[in-house]
Image (cartoon, rainbow, N blue to C red):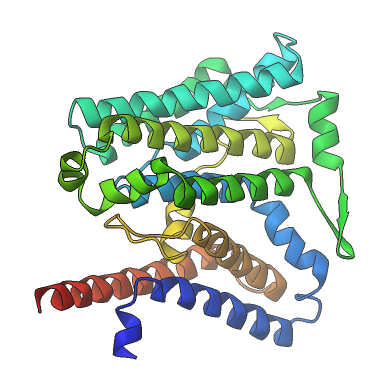
Length: 324
């Protein structure tokens, strides 16, 4: 057991086991919880969070943090709603513009972090306030989206294994698969892990550290804006108060999914298991019907404490092993 605890993939195994146990106990306690459609609803309701968690995984693996993703999501919904309703742009052009703006926003933060040697926490905190404030320059009220394409994406049900999923789920899963390929089959992915392990060593190996860090945050910004597009499909509105606290949910999903906060190690696929754990907690509380929704935050907080302690024990074990 001690040897297993010190293996890098231990937390990922625990997450999958935790998900299976939660679903098993929930299915035994609440008839219908394990129905195909309820499971698919976990993905439908959290497709935007999965996309954001994918981008956050790259950031945390590199040893950074991105607190701006929830605000960028909200800003993306506001820009999309304004361009559709007021400027009357074609929907595909609106989506492309939103994704480009999110990528540029993230790249700008990455450049500040690397070239000015600033802490990611401070830079992305500033980005969080900036993006959230820009929402209210567009409108202080919610903007309803009535564009036919967005409405169709919101209402379309794609039949699958006896149930249905939304187009947002397909986009989220495609993003996850692309990210897995980026992380494990490209020089960029190898550079991300190297930077997270030891940035100075990565520099000495001749890796393009600066370019990679800028691209990491650009990709996180892209994922946040894509999450905003999916959230706009889901809610059919743009609003400055959308997705408050989503950045913390994304960080929680990534950590619970097995990515080390200290950087250098993590599975992109773990973002999926982390998001499913969070979604399952919400679903169990909803099925119970007697607990406040705040119990979701309490349980997630408890899980985070446990996973952080496990990560610390793993790090200590690895340090002891290396020392000996």
